[in-house]
Image (tube, rainbow, N blue to C red; front, side, top):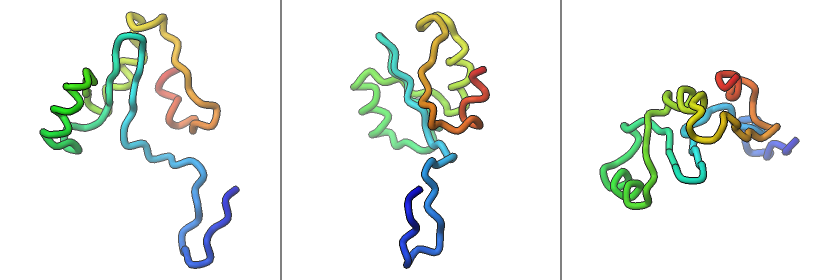
Length: 89
């Protein structure tokens, strides 16, 4: 476990449970799940230019249950909090 710096009143958290966005990458589809209010029009345009679709943050769970994108298998790091993976089961 990382050591807390002496000058820091906050403990170091090795895995942040607060997820701000998800990035889904398949063979032919890339989607950033992030609430629209967190992006400027310029960033939205840049994502579109890169062929990165943006969906609302809460849409991730519905998309992970789709079977059309690859047979329903999702790779999740074993260090990921169970609270963040539970809705995929």
